[in-house]
Length: 102
Picture 1 (cartoon, rainbow, N blue to C red):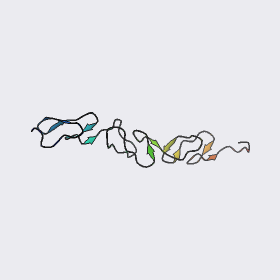
Picture 2 (cartoon, helix red, strand yellow):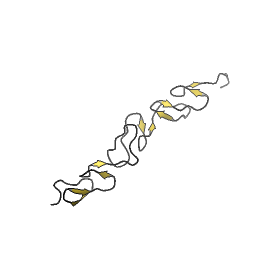
Picture 3 (cartoon, helix red, strand yellow):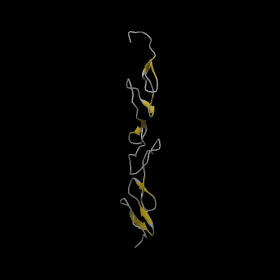
Picture 4 (cartoon, rainbow, N blue to C red):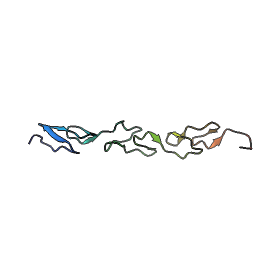
């Protein structure tokens, strides 16, 4: 027996106490998932791609903030939006336009 411990996640023992890990896994015993690109916004890499995202973020690497958006404005952080021209507020809920026709 070459390895004193079992290789995980499809890894193979190739030398005394040395595993060759499957794609997406690393560490001496192939127990650590690898996300490429890395998880953002405190996301956790719990299995090879995608990341487990904290509350308020989503997408494969937790790169997109969730929020209650008005007028299809994209989020830049949780509940903070990049407002389109003419709107303001954390969720773009206030119009900068003063005309009653808007």
